[in-house]
Image (cartoon, rainbow, N blue to C red; front, side, top):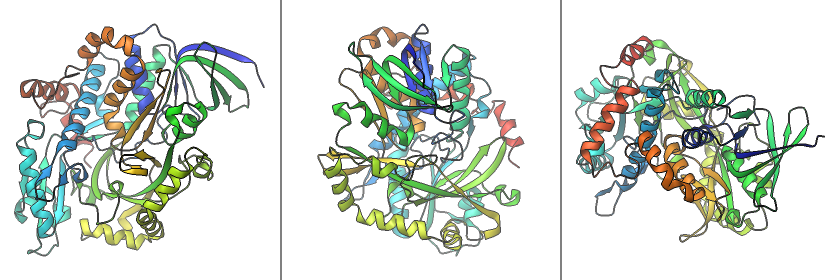
Length: 505
C-alpha cells in the first residue's frame, strides 16, 4: 500500500487511439496543461487499436454497404455515408497537420493508399448497388467512384475474386481509388511517442480501480500498478477511453448519465493469408453485403493489409461471443456490468435480440472448413492451407433505452459525459478509430465549452474544414484532398508510391 497522491489537469484512461487523439489535440491547444495517461497493459495500442484487432479500413463510407440504406421505393439513403466521410476527412486533415509540423514522421508507417470497393452477387443486389452508385457519384465527396457489372472489367479490378466463376453469374462492383488502409496501432504508438516527448506522463501497467468526486468537483482515482502499489491521482477532467473496459469505469464514476446503459460484447475472427502468390493477386478492400438477419458488424470483406512493411490478405469478420469486454479482460465482465439501474434495459435487449444470440452461437460453432466455405463465396479458388485464423479485438456494443424502446442495441460510437463536463467516456465500436478526431472534438465541445471559442483559430489551422460542410464546399474539398494526399503520401506523385510497390510482395 502507498499514500502517493498526485494532482494533474487531465487524466486519460486507456492508451488507445482515442486517448492518443485527445491528448494530442489538447497538447496543441493548451501545452501548459499537465496530462497523465494510465494504461493497464505494457504498451500503447494493444487492444481495439492494435493493427491485428481491427480491419484497418479508413472508414470513409466508400465501400461499406451498411452505411447506405435501401428505402422501400428502391432509392438509396446516403446521409450516413456523407456524415462518416466528412468525419474521416477531419482525421486526415489532423494527421496531415501532425506530419507537416514534424510532430509525427513517416506517414507510410500508418497509412497507405488502397482502392475501396463494394461487391455484390445476384440480380437484386446488383440493382441495389447500381442505385447506390448513382446516388453517391453525384456527390462531391464520392467523386471518382466507378461501377461495373462487366466480367472483363471486374477481372481487371479483382482477379482473385472473379476467376473460376460461372460466366452468367450476376455480379457487380464499385471502385474508388482514394481509399486507405490505416494501421491504427502504429498511429497510436506514434502519437504516444510524441506525447511522451512533450512531457505527458504515460504510466503503463497501471489499472484504475475506482474513482470518486472530491469536494471541489475534481475526480480522485485509485490506481494500482503491477507491483501492487496503490496511488491516488486527482484531476479536473477525466476521459475514459478504455475500449470495452470503459463501461465498468463509467459505472464506477456514479454519474447519472451513466445509468441504464449496458454493453454487449462481440468477439471476431479473421482469416489471414500470407502466401505471396495469392496476396499478389489482390489489391483493394472489398466489402460485401451482410447476410439477411446478420448484424452490421458481420459484413464480409476481403482486405489488403500493410503491417510492418508486409502485405497480407485478411477476410472476415466471423462474429463470435465471449463474456469478456477486452481481449485481456475477465470472463465475469458481462455479469459484473449488470447493475440494478440497467437490469431491465439488459433483459429487454436480451429478449429483443434472440436472433443475434442464435447467430453468434452459430458463428462460434463454425469449423475452419465452414469458414472456408464462406471465404470461397469471395474467392472460389481459396485453399485451406493458405489461410490461418486470427482472433480480432473485442467490441462492446452499447445497450440503452431509446425512442425505439427499452434495451436497444446500438451499432456505432457513443460519448457519455457528465452534465458539468468533468468526465467523459467513449463506448461502442465501428467506425470508432477512423472518426477519432471528430469524436474527440465532440468531447471537447461537451466538456470544455468555455474554452472552445478561444481554441477555434488553432483548431481551424489544424483542421481547415472544421465547422464547414465539405459536401457544400467542393472547392475546399478539392484543396483538402490534394493537401492531405500530398502530406500523407497518398497522391500518385508522392514518394509513398515507391514504398507501396516495395511491400506489395
